[in-house]
Image (cartoon, rainbow, N blue to C red; front, side):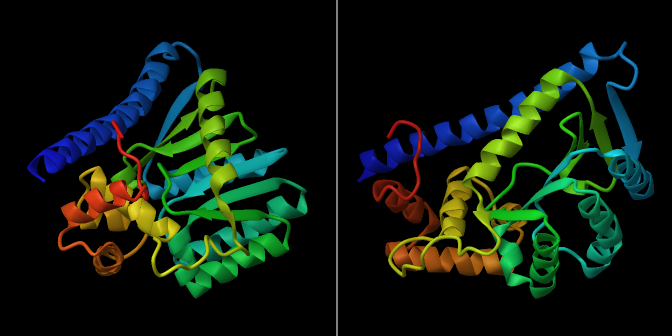
Length: 261
């Protein structure tokens, strides 16, 4: 048992390092792009404060020609934000702009957010959900991307990126997540009391990466209390007495994949 636990600890540490490497690679790509494009006017611009960010995004949406793609990783949306976005979204859809939005699965627990997403689809927009999203992202006409300077406080500042290389990478990221996402009208996976849901699998993956309940809750777009309840339900399904044991058993059953398996 000690040998098994030692091997599992090593695998989980390797997976955590791999995830961290991916995050650092994204940060490095943006930083390198900013450095190389220093002499190119408008290649990368910065907006600070929620009012300036909203004004810049509003201008972008006014000029959009064909397509808007978005990651919305904050789970349930506020009524205020949805009502503020409604006129702009309606104007885009009436102009025939293709709108694709990816939300978290947790939005399905928020009736106001579901109602707004349903309204979007009724007007021609496309909405899908996934357990987690890597970053808040807006892409306009595959030519301009908007990402937060600090994911923990996206209202503080945002980067407006142009350039073929970085836009190609971000569009491929969006398209790959879109392909595995579940359309709003579908149920994300059949319910099986002996198997984890897609959100529970993502919980186990985040747990194996070493994240705390608070971080996991934020990534899943749920409250810390919901994340703790999810942990209890997953442990019960696995017959585990600790979260570490839950990670070991989940890997043994093939519910999650770790490096070295």
